Amino acid sequence: MYKAHVYVVLKPGVLDPKGDAVKKSLHVMGYKGVNEVRIGKFIEVWLEAESREEALRKVEKMSAELLANPVIEDYRVEIVGGE
Amino acid sequence: MYKAHVYVVLKPGVLDPKGDAVKKSLHVMGYKGVNEVRIGKFIEVWLEAESREEALRKVEKMSAELLANPVIEDYRVEIVGGE
Image 1 (cartoon, chains in turn orange, blue):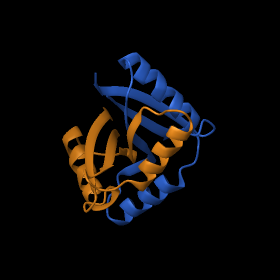
Image 2 (image 1 turned 45 degrees about the vertical axis):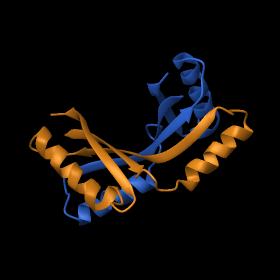
Image 3 (image 1 turned 90 degrees about the vertical axis):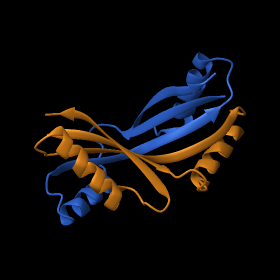
């Protein structure tokens, strides 16, 4: 069993209304020094695989096909555990 | 200007319907070996601070007060850049 971390973030230049709303709330709460907030997804995946390389390949494919929207999102995959 | 990464995840034992839905979709797509999927938030924050320590302290407070729901979520903060 392997464990993967997938970080999905909006591509640079893509507007982030949720991030902007959080930024405004933080300003209202007194955190004036906050310049920008961008909100993405942190996905943990546990999966069976023959090797670490195969686990990485599979999760990369899952990310490209489902976990991230290739039009507006970038993703990065790490295998963080397992054998 | 400092940059922080905040990882917000559901506490162990808290059900993750979104994660389960993604897992089922992955199974339908042929990724039978996927055992579990848990979906959290990956938040990037750019902020002004006097020091790295102050930046960390501020983002920890923001996380406890707004970015994470202390009832069902855990969070972890990293200062990843800036001076």
